[in-house]
Image 1 (spheres, rainbow, N blue to C red):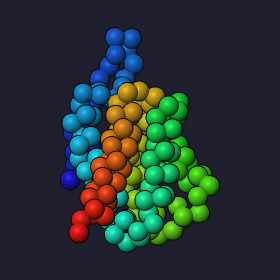
Image 2: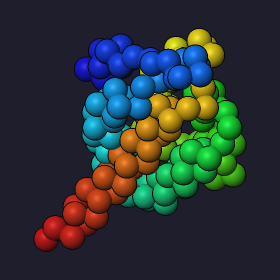
Image 3: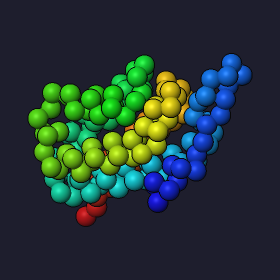
Length: 147
């Protein structure tokens, strides 16, 4: 579903002639991306109760990535994989990291390769990833508060 949705969102041209991802159109995709990541967070927690610790680290990395000048999927992957957290190398951590990277790459890579980078449309995608992590962590908190 997510892969099909990403092909429906397009580009626009600014008044200066620069091709950019249309933030209004990409915002239509953001809820599906957020939901996918939230589900991955809850699933990762179901497999490893300690996952909340490294999920928070991934969230921080995503937030820092938002202010970077290179918003390519490979830069996001490097940002996450270069974190000095050994738990991120575990299979349980990959339950959250893989969907985040795959979702971002599915949409972002095609535009970065076309020379469309460093624009608000890509940042909308990263914010959706952050929001998905937050939503997933809220779901985990609800699980923990249930009798």
